[in-house]
Every structure is written in C-alpha cells, then in structure tokens.
Length: 121
Image 1 (tube, rainbow, N blue to C red):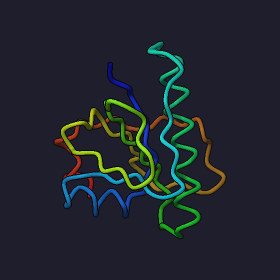
Image 2 (image 1 turned 60 degrees about the vertical axis):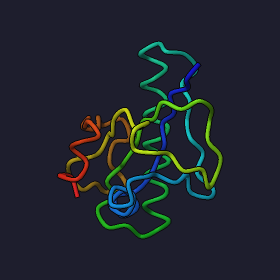
Image 3 (image 1 turned 30 degrees about the vertical axis):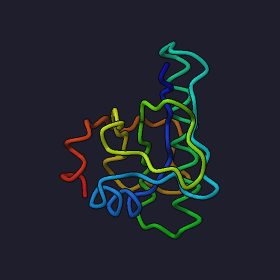
Image 4 (image 1 turned 120 degrees about the vertical axis):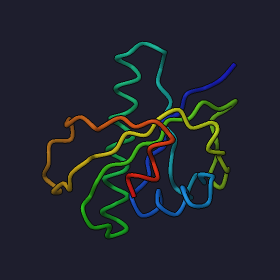
C-alpha cells in the first residue's frame, strides 16, 4: 500500500534537487500525510506543507518566499535523509509569484507535473 506525502521545500533546494534527479528529506522537515484520500484532507495536508515551506524560506533567507510542496507516492513516510527518486513524484505545487510574509496563507498554489519542473527554475 502506498502513502501520499506532501513534502515542503524551498525554491533554492528544488533547483538543486531537480538537477540531482532525487529529492532528499531535509533534517527537521516533516512530510505531511493526509488523514484520508478525501479531497478536503488532501487540501489541508497541502496547505500545512505550504505553511512549512514558508517557514523554511524565512529561516533560510530565500528571496521571494515562494511556497513549494512536492507530492510523492511512497511505501512509507520517509525520515530525514531519505532520498525520494523523481519517479515517485506525483506533482509539485508552487507559487508563481513572489509573496510577502503577510500574504494570505490560503492562497492557492499552481499545480505542475514532474516534467514541468525544469521549466520553473
């Protein structure tokens, strides 16, 4: 049985990982798992991961504060240091415009298929 996880990250890390062809669960990053496959639960998991992405961007001093959430289908919830191959990536959700720290946290993110990621960078 597979698990769908929502992995928060930042634009600078995304750029590095797309080039590397795999995604690493960073130390201190908690993948978010939806409580069920209900659309509302999945959306809540996406927004929780988006909030974590903003916090990561602020902590790292990433310009633009664009939220980035990567959605993976995995066999289990990965731990810090786990490598997730691009073949397990289902989609990416990314802000298409820079944000301020006081931007509405409920703003929608744009949805991208994995093959579109190189064009975002």
